[in-house]
Amino acid sequence: MTVLLEVESLDKRFGGLHVTRGVSFSIHEGDRLALIGPNGAGKTTLVNQVSGVLAPDGGQIRLRGEDVTTRSQAQRVRAGLARTFQITTLAPHFPVQRQVELALFEREGLTGRAWRSIDAYPALQDEAGALLARFGLREQAATPTERLAYGEQRLVEMALALALRPRVLLLDEPMAGVPKGDGTRLLAALDALPRELGVLIIEHDMDLVFRFATRILVLAEGAVLAEGTPEDIRRDPKVRAAYLGNS
Ligand SMILES: Nc1ncnc2c1ncn2[C@@H]1O[C@H](COP(=O)(O)OP(=O)(O)OP(=O)(O)O)[C@@H](O)[C@H]1O
Image (cartoon, rainbow, N blue to C red; front, side, top):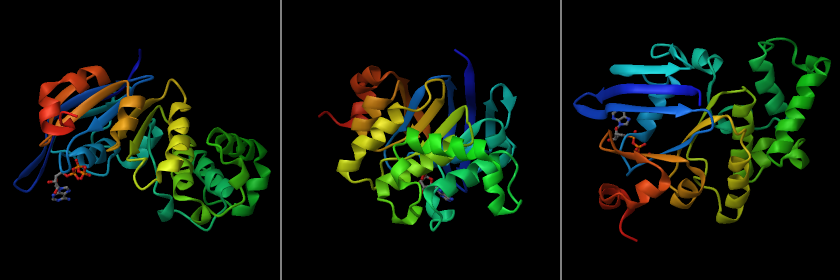
């Protein structure tokens, strides 16, 4: 399997606080790697370094063999790494279909041209329609995203990230705040992600983690406590003591 993302000996401090301690892992095509650990373990800080929001103090991040450690977020997106957007920070009053078209425009370097010219790009309109269909959002195509149910907004976020045609997708707590009833739809969407995509997911919902992940990386106090298959992790006494409990 082709290796997509390699994180090697990553290190990060906030003043005297050592929040990432020599963390290494890799993601191959088709991997669903879940990052779990107690509150404050350093999960978000780690993912922020991978996506380029934060600069590490040491270590290396490679995307498909290319060293991107000092590259900008935009450069990493172009190299094949996408993370879910918070749609509330985009244009929530835009209809869902337009939001996705906007992301496709950006991918194609067309942003800045007259917005009405979207009609001149039927292939992109079709692609946006296909993305909405993949996430079961066809009926909501004309609805402003701010009027969607919260769970549906998370689906739009995933559609926007996929619009960038990533090889690696970072999902930061896709289940957070989603009512129980909508969880099934979200899980179905996760299951339907392109097979060859590499996925790194941070999630506190252990049902989802153990159902979705092919491998799990457990962080504690900034360092890797354990890594393995869901079965390995479920049985690991260190993990049970530090995080999962004995239930
Ligand atoms: N910008 C910052 N400046 C100083 N300390 C920070 C900063 N960001 C995070 N921290 C600290 O780094 C540690 C790791 O935080 P982080 O948010 O990465 O953990 P987490 O595992 O994502 O937690 P949670 O599960 O609660 O989201 C915490 O002690 C946190 O207080």
